[in-house]
Every structure is written in structure tokens, then in C-alpha cells.
Image (cartoon, one colour):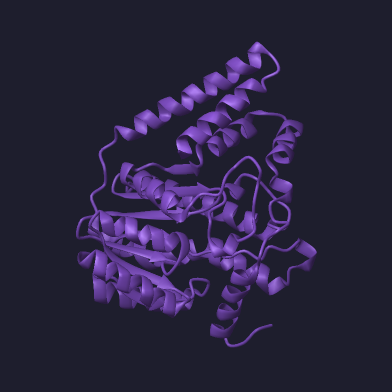
Length: 331
């Protein structure tokens, strides 16, 4: 159903070409993307059976869906989240459906490096070496820049970007000792596309993507690239509480389960970067080649500038409130 939807959108995009030359260029790019996808499908899959996968933000939304996907392929799980009740509920469901996943849970504020290092020490002692670290926790303020308090900008960067530095410093030494490991970084398509009322979010997600790419380069330069991998996932709108009310006319919201399935498949194939959905992936490629006025037109037609107009920020406010409380009071 979803594939047929995107096929219709692709055919519509081809029909909008103003000349045969434009249509041929679109067909060339589409063919390159198809060939690239076929190559990725031929790679041997990573095996996580019996290995430990840590997921931040694992209590709900995409993190919860990722937990079920990894459990379904035999992983043992460690879930971190700010919401202890959500963690407990997700862990109980996992134990019932996938007893072998044996999920361990911890309430952890990933924006705080001290908390991350302390919880990482406990995790390694309780679960053993962590094979895959999934940096999924995220937050969004949903306000224009001048209306966003400074401390919320700082917290947004700490959660969306800096957590990946703290996680790498906490778990990479054990991965190096074990001579295997993987980091799955959940970034966003906003790493490529700036959007109103998402300045702090877009910038922090761009930082998370750059951090992950630099980490991969550093591992490869040190001779560890064949054993310790990095996968970056850049999805567009996902149906989660954090983005309730967000909408764009051309790109439908994706379910957490769909994004989780694609993300775990990309991880297993050892892909470096996955942009979802495919139509947006094409847009990212075109954006790198087209003049700025054309990129601006794409944004207008795609509704990027109006996407946050109906955003319901209550879930985000809850996240900020919990972090502020854990840090010793609000500002």
C-alpha cells in the first residue's frame, strides 16, 4: 500500500517535468537510487542473536518499535528512557512476546554525561558487552527561535546531538576490546532541510549526523572500521507524540513500526545512511545539485514551511519538565 503511494508520487513528479531533459534527469537519479538499493540488499546481514542492544528513548514511540524489531531477530535488550512507567510497560510486553530479549531497563537522562557514564557502567556490569548502541532519544521545542528559552535550546542539543558523544565515549572502549560493535544514530531529514519552528531541532539533528559521520571516519582511520560500524537514520515525519499535529501535504507520516523495520534492516545490511521515505531521499539528492531557488521551491511545494503550524507541544513540554526536574529544578 505504502509502496504504491510512493510510486504514484514518483509518477506525479515525472509528469511535472517541464521538458524531456528534466524527465531524463529524474529517471537517471531514480535509476541510481534503485541500483544503490539493490546493492545494499545483497550485503550479508549482521547477526544479533544473543547479543546486547541498548536503545535510548526505548519506552515509547520509535524506541519502543525498535525494541520489538531487535527482539524479533534475537537480541537481548537494554532500554533507557526518562519515563519509568513507559519503560516498565514496554519491558513487560517484550518479556511476554520475546522472553529471550530479557530486557533490562533504566531511567536515564541522556542529556547529562554524568548520568550516561554512570548508567553505562551499571549496564556493562549487568548485561555484559553492548554490541549495538541505538541513540534514539530526542526532543523538540516546536517554537520559533525568539520564543524558545535558552535552556531549552541547550537541552535540545544535549539530547539530540551530544548524547551520541556521551554514548560513544561510554561504550566504545568495550567495543574495541570485543573487536565488534555498532552505533545506530537516529537523526532526521531536517539535518538536510531547515524548517520554521524547528531551528534548534534541525541544527541539533544536523550535528548528530555530522558527529556520526566523523565517528565513522575516526574509526576507519584507526583501523576499526571493519569491526565497528555506524548507521545513520534520517526519517521524515513519524507518528509519535513529540510530533503530534505536524503535517505536510506531499509526504505522509510514517508509523514507528515502519521506520523501525527499515532502520533495523539498514543496520543489518551495514548501511551507512538511510533517508526515509524514498521520495525524500530523492529530494535530498536533488537538493545537493539544484540551485537554491529550486530547493526553496521544493520546500514550498512540499509544505515544509507550514509543517509545524498545528504542532501539539505537550509531549515535548513533558520531556523538558522531566529533564529539568532531574537536573535539580526548572529555569
